[in-house]
Amino acid sequence: MFVTFPDSAKIEVSSALANKLLKAAEGLPLYQNEEFYSSTLQLFVMNQIRESSPEEFDALAGLIKSRIAQWPYCVLLQ
Image (cartoon, rainbow, N blue to C red; front, side):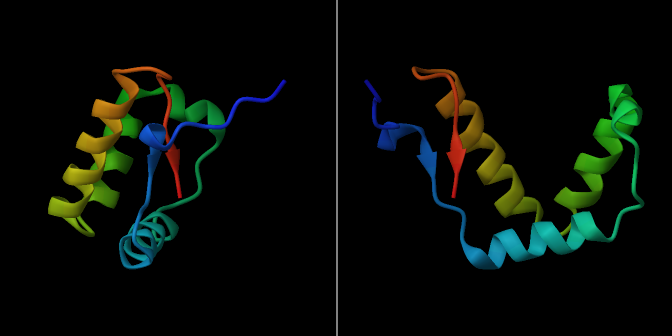
């Protein structure tokens, strides 16, 4: 039996914000998956993407943190 993903775990991201974040990510060099084991690289990438829209990025990160702190302990970004 399948259970419907709860609406409380869904976050709707505006297309404008999604496009800003994508453009910032695409401007970064390509990294190998193993390189992301480095927390220094993770922080660098986050900060580079965050610069594209700091207030909206922080608001989105806050929403994600609040949603994963409660059941079902996951988030679906749309």
